Length: 298
Image 1 (cartoon, rainbow, N blue to C red):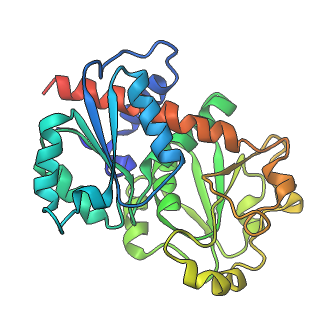
Image 2: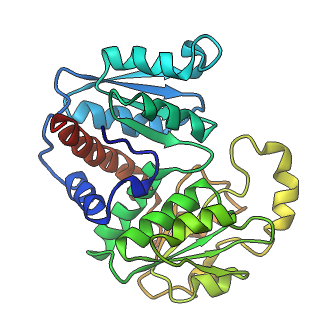
C-alpha cells in the first residue's frame, strides 16, 4: 500500500506525475462512491477545504473528524481508529501533532494514509508550492527558491521536494532556528541545500522567495522572543528587489502581516499567495488520483 507521509515517499518521476495529474482539467472520478476520512487534531482552513474539495472533484465523499471525536490513544489506540476508518473509507488523511501518529496509521497498511501536517513535515504544502512554481515558470529544473525563516516542517518538506525536482533550495534562518542534523541528512539524500546566515544572501537572484510565520500554532508563548530573534528577516520591497527580475513571492499562510512580510509584498504584483492556496486543492487532487491508481494495482 502506498502512503504519503513525506514528499520523498514519491520518487522524482512519480512526483512529476502527481503534478501532471494536478493540472488535469478532466480528473478521473477515482473516488466515485468512496469516502475519505480527514482526521484533524489541529484545525486548519486551507487544508480542510482543499482536501474536501479535492475528494469531491474525484467523485468521493469527505468526512471531517475532529481529534476529540476519535480520541487517538485516549478513547482508542491509533491502530484501532485506523482500522475502523479503513472499514468505511478508501483513504485516510490526518493532521496531527506527532509524526509518529501517521507512521503508526500507515503501518496498519489497509488504505493509503496521507500526512496533512505533522511536527516533522507538511508534504501537501510542498506539492502545492512546486505546482505553483511549475505553472509560473513552465518547468522546475534549474529554478531556485529562497526560504527565509524558521527551518520548520514546511521548510523541511519543501527542501526535499525541491531537491527531487531539480530546484535549488536556499534557506536563511537565525541562529537556533536552523535544520537539525537529522533533517539535513534526510534532505541531503536528494540534494544539497544552500544555507545562509543572512536573508539577503539567500534571496539574491532567486526565482521564488518564500516566507512563513515566525510563530507557528502551539508556539504562542514564544512570540515575543521570536520577534526579537527574527529581526532583519522580514520580506519587504527592498528584499524582493534582490531576487531575480521575474521572481515571485510565496507564503503558505496564514500570514502575520507586518512581521515576516509586509503588506506591499503580500498584495504586490509578484505575490502568488492566492494561486498557491488554490493549488493546495489541485495538488491534493493529483496526489489522490495517483494513490488511488496505485491502490487499485495492489
